[in-house]
Amino acid sequence: MFHLPIQDPASATQTPAPPPVVDAYGQLTKRASTFGHVDDLFYFTYAVCIFFFVLIVAVLLFSVVKYRRRTWDQPAASNTTHNTPLEVVWTVIPLIIVMIMFAWGYMGARDMTIAPIEASRNTIKATAKQWNWTFSYPNDPAQSYNEVWVEVGRPVQFLLESTDVLHAFYLPSMRVKRDVIPGRYQTVWFEPTEVGEYHLFCAEYCGKDHSQMYAKVHVVSAAEYGARPWDKWDDSTPEAAAKSGASLYSQICASCHSVNGSAGVGPTWKGLFVKNADGSIVGRQREVIEGGVRKTITIDNDYIVESIRKPDAKKVAEEPYVRNAMTAFPDLDDRKINGLIEYMKSLADSK
Ligand SMILES: [Cu+2]
Image (tube, protein in one colour):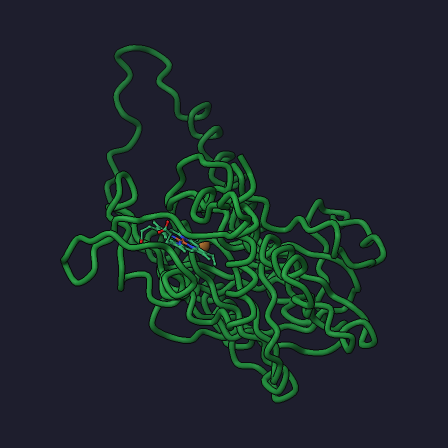
């Protein structure tokens, strides 16, 4: 509803329009040099299905016409109940076909998850959580949210992590899909061949906003990649920090927190801070439960930081949020949290 994960016009990067997205068969065009088996196996399975469909329907129709009962008292032409050679044939042939699909798919899945050395040296971590994606680049403190940049022609590995429930990393243009499983790392790799923008989807139903859990994948030239386009955090002034915070909010907090006073999964941010007549900004009172004890606190920076890093320490005790939980964002660094706080404070003015 108020969740627009991949829109950020101010910072949109210039990439040429991607070439046509579907091939002659209406399939989404493949943009990776890797995993040709996905399409081959798809067409093989498709051909097998069409072949058997036509064969079975043809035999069925033929039999219906040829062996139909011509008069009401006509006795059955045959009472055969078994035919061992025929049964062996129709068991063994499908078994062979299914084993071909299995072996082909298994080898393909293995190729997709065991990365070559160039790809493992270029590993981007993708953290999935309800309902967004966070990307961390090799040896780089800056992260991006619901947008990721990869270099054209360079194999890349994704290390997949979930901080809450099952998700799945699905990038159809690159023909890769991999479950993201809480409590363990999964990997997947590919080599993009075409500059452009592609969609990454969550392909495992993961709750209310699962359908909003998609990200944009920018495949860019080496020069553009070298400029670290994901590092957009500006906190040179409190206003700039609030603006950066607002953009981060819309990417990873807006699915649960509104800024206009309406109720979401979590409390609205409007009115967390209020502006006094003298211009000073102070936090409102909040009923919380800490260690099972209900108390009233005044919202301040420490409380916000704690709510983001350790949301369970003080749970909001006000209806209807008391039953809802927030999962921690342990990866957000101080600069990001400061930007979010500046943004919350900037809302103090809004009536
Ligand atoms: Cu998901």
